[in-house]
Length: 319
Ligand code: CP
Image (cartoon, rainbow, N blue to C red; front, side, top):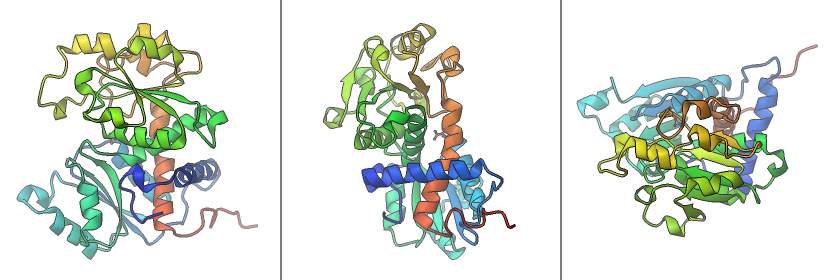
């Protein structure tokens, strides 16, 4: 595998499953007496966040600390970026302090690739969300969560039916999930109003539907997406009420799902818009599992990219 994770395209199917297997191993170790592993002791991981985040930033921080790395959190707000400092100068500052991995979230699609290709830093670059382009670790944690609910598909997702619903146009989560789920063999259907389906999506490895009610009874996983009002410069639907009526996971739609179907959402959720509070809090919802799994999967990604001591080093009890 390369030393960066910028896109799901960077991973083969085997490498993707390998990361999920490593996360599974880390889950078993984390359930034991050793909560913190010495694997990345002496390494420095920088969270470089130019856009807001709760789950991704916290879980990368937690993941790095659980592997004993030193963590530096950099938020553009309150930094010299607000005085006009460029990405190049910021990156060179990180190089000077000896960063081994830089986890970057940025509003510009391609920012992570730019950092990795620039030659400004020698660290591994991990894309934590770039504009509307990709969010690869979110897709990996989603696949890990799906796999834990459907063990029959542990080695291959062929036959698994996933619907990704809502604001596909602005969603880096949707793009990474389409690439990963298709790579792993799943059958993916995008469900959205025509205005929120990107131009060119007909060439993606997916089916496209505009009728949520006809899709819901025959799927294993429904992944609801946040309506990203902050990225909308146009009117994409007449009103929130009409959007919710046609594309929201309402209480009545929740009842259409099969008993085994799980409800996912990457967060943060707009309760009452793309998902009802009852759906978000129902026993079918795995939203909080996704958050918890994010730590394990990000530990697996850091371990895979940075190497370090074997996972079981230091976990044996001395007799
Ligand atoms: N899913 C996700 O990326 O959430 P945050 O924006 O809170 O990191």
